[in-house]
Length: 109
Image: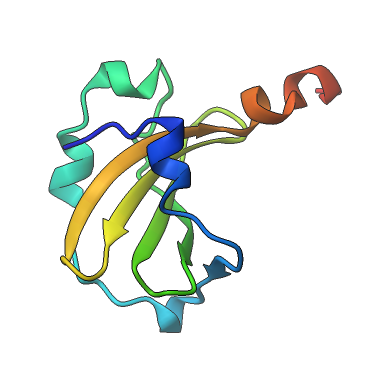
């Protein structure tokens, strides 16, 4: 199990990432055990107990699949990166859009 750095995560992305529809999604890797084994420290206090998948993206070369799990926090996702060729989990990354794009400052909630 690997917590991916920002650079490692971005290396699995490319221009043209495709949002998959439910009928396009295959299940080459079981993610449940992997997600349950992620240390709490990797989640930075965010709650992912719902384990709700909100989006799945595939890179144009069909190498990487990004599975986004919604947290209880607004705009924070746990991204599980799947290596399609190896049929295994490459790692995970905490994607905090509020932090990345300063959305907290724009919020009117």
